[in-house]
Image (cartoon, rainbow, N blue to C red; front, side, top):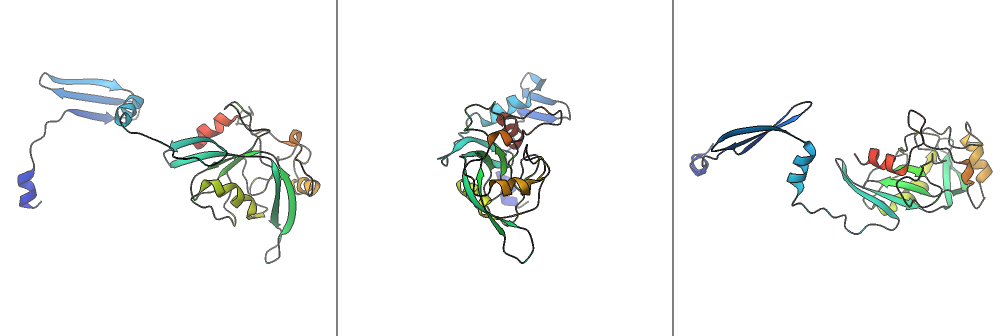
Length: 227
């Protein structure tokens, strides 16, 4: 250490020490009377450390239902109303994709800037976190709601993610079974039946379930994706 810096250092009294164990957090407080040691809650520590930190989302995009600051950065849940989307499905390499005009149900995109969103179908715009969620009847989507990147390029502006998802070329990737009550093993047959139709039949949606087969709700998936 340079001599000039060493001369500027001053002895400093230790006031508090945290020892983090696998199952507990122990706080030591030092003062003139000695040392006090006690167990503390990680939540209490977080409250003290962030008590003077202001967190604001800024302006949220149209359709935003929820915003969360997670360990992996900010995420936004966007509601996309039911509508007809013109989509392309790549069936063979080096050939043009097959075009569809598909009615899609309302859906929730859980977005992070520049990353593939998570996607769930809903029967209407959610009013509470207890609204049930359903498997989106599309390719490039997994059973847990995650989506694969495919040919999509997701921007930093999460408001553009719904359009970027549907405007990308779909491929027969992901978990595309059990996405239709009428066609549980044949999503292509479901798309064929919908091509040119104006509205998606909501009674055809398949619930998203946990491992115990209990239907998941919006709050469940936001809690899971918000970590």
